[in-house]
Image: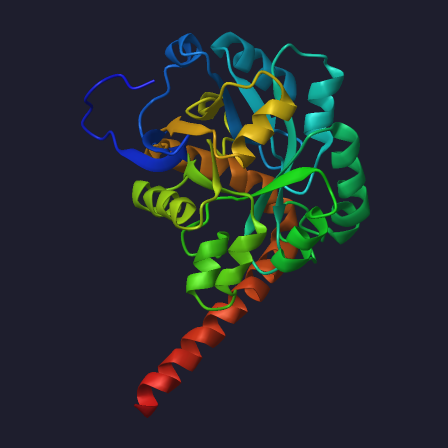
Length: 312
């Protein structure tokens, strides 16, 4: 997995106790994944955060699957508040390991990656809670809060992962960012099974903080590109020895996963941003309303802190 010294390689080591012996385990590697080398070590690699044209990406499912097969990796299709993309992938009967999932956007800001062991459970959860909770801008925040979403997942055989917990930019789309802004309690992390420790769309320092967060709270780890363009696919991967959905998700839960990848450069981030923007143009008015509602708590908190500081 590790290709030797590189200028910007960063490694995160975790301690684990096995048979009364303490071992140092290499868990997170900030470098370009070498899929062939990963496979030679008996590991399977999956891009655990990828979007298709079923939400805010132009990438067709069949094109993503074709490239994933060429690269020798698996794929979790995690469209925003939508599951039709992953269902299409299963209907195509691909040889690619496809993890059923979606990225749910909570009313109060955070994005939540939810992965299911089976398509029927994914469909039931979506129809029962997500579909009817969507708003006029379908890829942005639904009407359910973070707390409501994670509590509802507890009745299903699935795992919940905090997507890009410190991002994006000025938006409160990460759960830990909301905690540190003081409009979510730190206890909310207890409801999550895992933390996305490398997100391709984030900055390195934000991913490093996410890695430390996972270590602090002893959470499973995942990584994915948050890809919207075909060229993004496979630049960040989650690796385990499992060969099927059951084993892969169970390995994440049991802290047996490894994450390898690098963030997109600024040019690719800008290109992705422009493409994603075009998907929201027809939803401009409802999108602005959602962003306004989500940022109200931040503005209120800033005002409260300013008042407290002034009174001192």
